[in-house]
Amino acid sequence: MQRTTLFFLGGAALIFVIVQAMISFGLLNDFYVNILLLASVYAIVGLGLNLIYGFNGQFSLGQWGFYAIGAYAAGDITYWWTLDKSAHALMIALLAVLFCGAAILLLRKLLSRVRGVDALSAFTLYLVVVIFLVFIAIQLGQALSPAVSGLLSLLPDGLSLQIVFFLAVLIAGLMAAEISFLFGLPVLTLGSDYFGIATLGLTIIVKVLLDNSDTLLPFPEMKGARGMVGIPEVTNWFWAFAFLLVIVIVVRNLLHSSYGRAIISVREDEIAAKAMGIDIAHYKNLSFVLGSLFAGLAGGLYAHINGFLHPNTFNFIKSFDPMIIIVMGGLGSITGTLGASFAWAFILEGLLRVILPQGTETWRFVVYPLILLLIMLLRPKGLMGEIELPFLRQVLPPLKPKAQPEETQAEVKP
Image 1: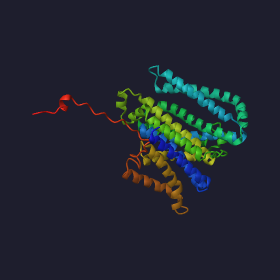
Image 2: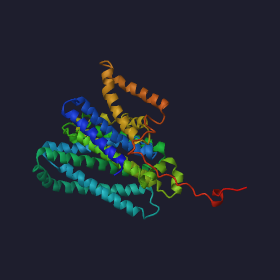
Image 3: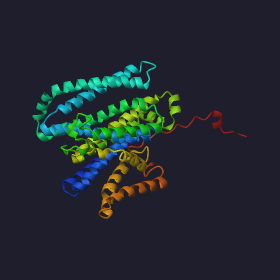
Image 4: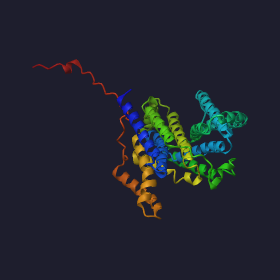
């Protein structure tokens, strides 16, 4: 194992232990623990958007929509388990994402062998198959849920809740990823600016559906615009740190692989990348799906911080938050995204609330745009745009010196 890897993992373990000790001994109260968890969630969302925009070059404002999908999906699963120890929501969602994921992979492989299939036709085929499989998952999930509920009930209450929570967060991420794949089929053919507008439209659609989830959608427990309550507060420092650490390592390894080089080449020059044989559409879709996966996971964690979800948390104004974070930290910088996420949470929700006089806390939404404006003027590449931790920095092999011709190497004698 390389020394940089050991230092990174050792430093991560040290940070986790120090923060956990401060929480255990009461040195951090609930307010600051909550900010710490929110910062971790923002970092996960930011890493996903940085993969889409910072590394792949696709301007997207849909990250907050997939964040909302993940939050409500995970919250609904744990809500039913907490309410009556029923795993029917868990089984239906699990079977749905597994069936749809397998179908998407199979159909994509089959369609790759057929020429002349346009994006809208492929989208229609995927959509029909997904709707059919979701119907099958509902029927099968309801049949299997009593047995699964019985097995989970044999475990201690705390352990069973942790298992359901962990599965709910994973399902939330997979659901967001699969929806993003379907959405990206026709939309990724648009140019970058039009793609950004389309993703913003998706965020607005998701928010409107959540406002009417108890009428338009068959989810009365979400209570529409009144907000969803009854979600267990399970997310703690261990879960937030563990998910963040895994995602950082996944993004780092992806970017250091041949897939990562292809993703970055699309950002640099699509025409040159296509001339080199790189499948532009594939790598755009891959980045979009992975970024949405991270947003869904972050949403699942967020739903279990305060145990309450409201559609106004996911309005289109908030969809600019991840964009601001990655611009402040530096596009194409993992370290910058991590630093900006924690700085964003502690300054906006902590420091400015304390500094500003009582009754003027909302002025913090005026202060941070001014801070962003100064950063863009003074540091166009972001606060840490050119800084990366050694473990996260991609080290290219040194160039070999070209062999000199013998006649140039020989000393010329008079």
